[in-house]
Image (tube, rainbow, N blue to C red):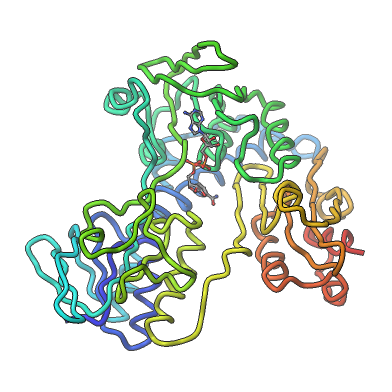
Length: 451
Ligand code: NAI
C-alpha cells in the first residue's frame, strides 16, 4: 500500500514523486516508456541539444564580421543525433537514481485505475495490482494527429514525422515541409535551416508562433525569411501523401513537394484508457479538469502536467506536481497561471510572460507599451552584429504595474524568469527601478526601458 501512486514519470510525475517522498509519503511511479517523459526523451532536452550544435555551426559560418574566420566548418548530423542520445541517456539515468535515492519504487508498466474501496484506490500495472491512498495523474500529451487525408499512411511510410521521430532521423532531408508554425515547428525550422535543408512552413493562421506578441513573431518570421525559409500563411493542410502536401489557401487548392513532413499542429492530453471516467473524473476535450491545486473532480485524485491541458510546458508541469503534493500534505499553495513564461528556442530566442500587447488590448486594459531596441545594451551590440532584437513591456497606465513582457534576442530564455517574478507580483515600475541589474548584460536593457 502506497500513500501516493504517480502515473507517468515525466517532469510533473518525477518531480512530484520526489517532493512526496521528501514529505514522508511512500510513493511509487508507474511509467510505461522511459522516465523523463516527453521533455527529456523527445522534447525540450533533445531539441536543445540539436539547436546548440546548429548554433555553433551558425557562429562558424557567420564569424567574419567579428574578425574571426573558419574554413571547412561542416555539419555531421548523425553525430549530433548520437550526442543528443548521450545527453538524454545521462539525464534519464539521473532521474532514475534520484527516484532510487528517495526510496521511490519505479514500475515499468502501463497503469490503469481499476477501482476504489473506501479511501483506497487499486491500480493495475501489468499483472500487478497496486493499492494507494492517493493518485496523481501525470500522463502528459501526444502529438495531435487529426484525420487529415493520407496522414496515417504517410506516418506509417515515414514521409510524415512527429516531434518523436524527427529527433531520431539520421538522414538530412533536402526539403522539409513543416505543418504548423507553432513552437515545435519553429524550433525544428531553426535547426534544419541552419544545417542547410530547404524549409517550407505551412501555417493555418495569418501569423506564426501562436499567441506570441504579433510584432515579435513578425520579426522572427522576417529573420528566417532572410535565411531562406518560406512561410505559407493562411494555409490549411488537407492532405499529406508521400512526397506531397495539399493545402487550401484563399479558397484554392495548392500543393507543395518535399522529402519529409513534420506534423506539429498541437498536442493532445493523454487521458483515455486510464479508468478516470469510470471513477467520475471530469474530462473536457480529452484533458483532465483541475483547479489551481491540481485537484480533479474526484477527491484523492490529482492531475499535473500536460494531461490537464492548462499550460503544456515542462516548467508548468514541475510546478503543478509540487503544488499537488503540497495540497496532499496540507500545505497552502496554488499555481499562478498568469505568470508562466514561455520560450521559443530559435536563434534569436523569443520569450514572453503575462499579457501581450494584443491580449491586453483585447481585454480592454488601459496599458502603456514600453519598447526598447536591444542595441541599447552594450553587451548586445558587442555580440550581435546587425542584430535588431527588442524588448516590450506591457504596463498598466493607472498604477504603473508590469502586466506582461515579450522579447526577441539573445539570452531571452535566461532573462525571462526574473521578469516572470515581477509580473507574478505585479510589481510597479517604481519598485523595480530600485533594483540593480548587472552590467554589461542584455537584460539591463529592461532597466533602461522602465525609466
Ligand atoms: P502549437 O499549438 O504551438 O502550434 C501548432 C500550429 O499549427 C498552430 O499555429 C496552428 O494554427 C497550426 N495548425 C493547426 N492545424 C493546422 C493545419 N491543418 N494546417 C496548418 N496549420 C495548422 O503546437 P506545437 O508546435 O505542436 O507544440 C505543442 C506543444 O508543445 C505546445 O503546447 C508547446 O507549448 C509545447 N512545446 C513547448 C516548447 C517550448 O517551451 N520551447 C517547445 C516545443 C513544444
